[in-house]
Image (cartoon, rainbow, N blue to C red; front, side, top):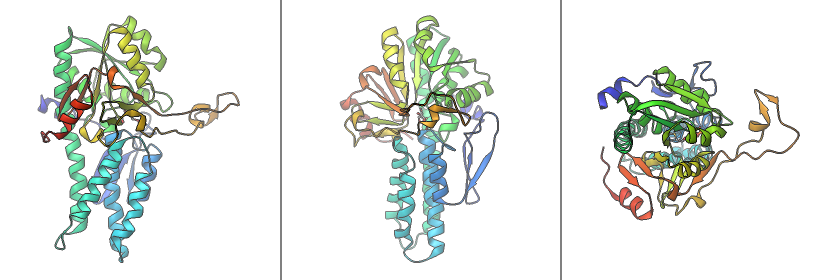
Length: 358
Ligand code: MRU
């Protein structure tokens, strides 16, 4: 299946070429495919904040390359470049608060920095680390896709109808996706009849990104408003809700795009299985439960306006962009280290102390 999956890889969102970071501007998709070039850590931090690049793994990978760009500029400026680089670490860390992959990637870059020997070329070492972070995410996608497909094959008659939320595909990762990677692989395996994609207000990652990725590969996909999900579970024979994650805490609680929690509640009510697919870089063992996860709040204007025009009455808006699904609503978490059915603290602890499989 690995070769089949690699052959199906068409879209990518991040490229590191000739010492520059290139990001596909996801704000313009699907109407326009425009790549932007980045040569500074501050510009990468802004791109993360402004949603040029989004999706937990993609944010982490971009931040790692941001550190390389920062280091290059600081080295060229001379003086205490390591101390100066701290400013870039801080700037990148402040770009978005919820996806732990950002902080995981920055930590890896910081640890690589700490291991530098006098004979090492610092820039080459940091670049190699960022490339490794990027490549290992791609590998993790491939492994998770295979685990996820096994679960789909095992649990129901085929082909099946799946519901997904937000965008967890090639655009959100270094490979071809987490939840969407599983869905893609299941489609290639003949296990899928139709994918229902929540439009995902207010940024429309579902309509603009997920629908675009799936349609581009000929996967049958129907778009629905977020609030249709319960109705679809009741009427369309949906067997799985499959989503990604921005942070998974030690007890198995999952932060993901706003709306995921209500999907899990509805799935439980309708007897629909609920799968979370995320690399182990999304697991934050330092937090006991989802209550500790910082939830990003974005500007109210994202709800009050459409295409720059006011559509709402003159009221305030509340715009949390992630929510937390409690572990007891989740049937299975799929990672590249293995799968965790009915997640809890003991199972997560066991998963995280295993050796990496790739
Ligand atoms: O605000 P976004 O678009 O960065 O939110 C993305 C999500 O919530 C995804 O589901 C999550 O990051 C997993 S991506 C593989």
